[in-house]
Length: 287
Image (tube, rainbow, N blue to C red; front, top):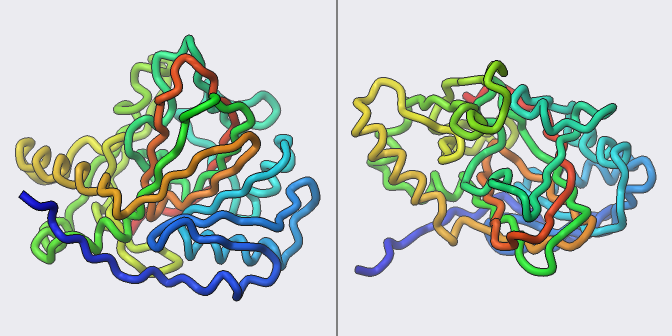
């Protein structure tokens, strides 16, 4: 049986030539762009910051490749997009003296890696982080890519019947689903209810907002119906037509919008090392 046809609407992107302070190179027609011309060793000028925010909104995930940065430079970059979000679930991975910075590390002793299934960061929190800024300083010789998928595109590709079915439904997101066996038992882990379709507060576009990493069930539905709908949506968001795939280089940075993206870290490099740091950015309650 042939794969169903997927029709994607044109995202609201401007021409890369319209940027004056930075270089912007889209990765594909749907999502993602590489950014050049930003000196992270220095305070970021207002015109550069404004164009970074515009590129972030237009492309949903942006990537910078450059020299090594310290925690202060990482924090300066994150502040271009907002205040830091410190998630309750990350307490054991925080960097001493920099509570907003979380260690992201995997090596030959790892039993799991952060984000190895499709998810939106900390969607379990009452106000999930609007974005994440990930900096990787150590990489395996091969592998370790991250894949990003547009939830605008995923929502728009649904049938009108499915859109109507989920329009007013809410789903429960639980930190215990991802972190329950990885953190201290006495740590209180957040659980939140969010709409399955959220409206982006900046673009005004609708995006699918359920993910395999945190979503446990749909409120108000029998367990079998909830499981069936979620299983379909989890498979749907993994459609390659919605995606871009980023191959890291040492000291590269990815900045993504959790409100309209899901991502997955590919763990194909065991037992090699992949290591870096992440800062999350405060968001608001999904509506």
